[in-house]
Image: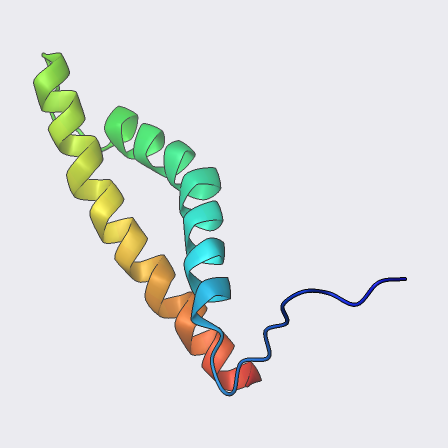
Amino acid sequence: MPEPVETYDPEGVDYAWVMQTTFVLTVAGGGPVVALLALFSGVSLPTWGARASFAVRVGALLWFVVAVAVFLYARKQA
């Protein structure tokens, strides 16, 4: 078996793992959350612009919350 050309051994928090995990969790879980909030929040979304603006606002908050949670988990595990 040939040796790998490059290896990576992070000390402390692996920020690449944090970013990748944040992306996957936000995309996989964020879509249904935004859709459910759009349906049941009582906010009127009559145009595509209003819907997109709502999705960006909710998605940004969700992304931030997931990123902080994943970082704290990674820091605890390190």
